[in-house]
Amino acid sequence: MRRFRSALVVGAVALMGVAAAVDGIRGGEPKPDPRTVRTDRVHVSSAAQSVTGTLIYLDRRCRLRKIALPSGAESTAPRRVACGLSLDPAGRLERDGETWQPGGALSARCAQGYVAVRAPGGEPILRRRGCSPAWKPDGSLTYIVDGSLRLSSRLRDRRLLLSALDVSRAVERANATIGPTHLRQVVWLDDRRFAALLATNKPPGPEGLDLLIVFDGRRPVRGATFLAPRLSGLAASPRGRHLVVRTGRGPREALTFLSRIGSPSHLSFVNAHAIAWSPDERWAVVATQRSILVFRATGPYLRARRLAIVATDIAWVR
Image (cartoon, rainbow, N blue to C red):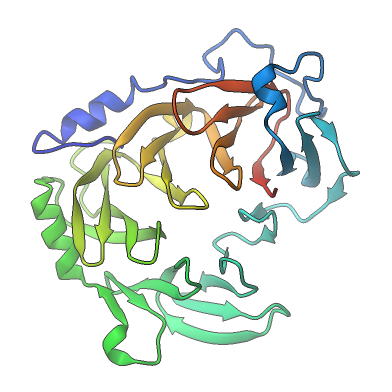
């Protein structure tokens, strides 16, 4: 994930040196026992005192827990849930691949090549051929089918948002010599602008290179492209100001931050697997293999505190 012009490979190579804010993950911190959960209440910095809200997270025993900030104290007793579940940005439990309507009660999930939309009670209300459902901020649903991005609409002429030809032209404009690509995932930044993750059909290297492009309607935003090995887990902040994408696999896995136009912020967390933002997007938390980091998401990087908690997923609810 980095910006590029014609020399795209530079972005991929530079990625490995971007870990500007690593949770001491490369060594030096004692590894906590994953069977225990505790917080660092001994010292709370002045910056941490200004961070308020409630964190909901899942621990390795598949228990749902809550942490109050800035105290760092458990606010409720843990509740055991089914393993394999994850949390949406509002702290609701969801199955793998499920996504919730912003500010609404509908959920969408891809299964066996079809997108199914369900009402609050779980009853199906809509079924479309395709996959990778994504909600626009206005609450309308989009999905990917046959390499194109479509809107779930009763009006046929409004359904096609981005064609496979649009994607090919965008790749050409980026001078991305990465072979054939296909649209894999979309996240919406506002009701017109979205980030698209393109996977290569024929990777040129042992790890493969994927491409991220930000679109405004059907047109790619100038310079809003990012190329890196094995991109996945694309996510946007609540107000669409920031993007995060996972790069690499195993020991090379990292969460890298991008601006809403796809340019890198020089902030990357190695061995991190989950992120959540405060509702105002001023602060964020990242779950790593050893702890949860609370840091400033806007302006110069500032780590407010580290919670000695091992979490598999996390959400910041208020």
